[in-house]
Image (cartoon, one colour):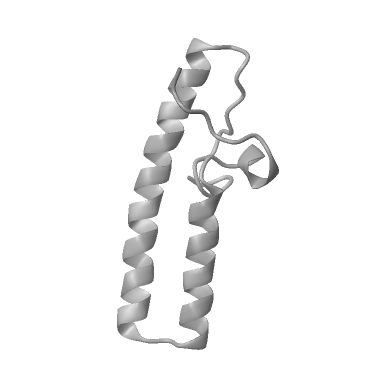
Amino acid sequence: MPRLPPRQGYFNVVTCPHYVFEIISWILFNMLHPTVPGIAFTIAGYSVMVSYATERNDQYQEIARENDKIKIPKWGMIPGYV
């Protein structure tokens, strides 16, 4: 059986909460130390993490369709958006 996401905390809301908190930390870092490379890195990291989160959420949704007892969050990374 494929690996399933944890079922507690923020994992009940999104599939990849660790990406959400990583992006928040990079945004806060750039607010404290604004540089062009830092902002570019944050934007690039965000786009990569959104793509990974969407892909992972699609995989989990496929597993959930095969087994009706498994509940998977609807969102991959940001509730209401991705």
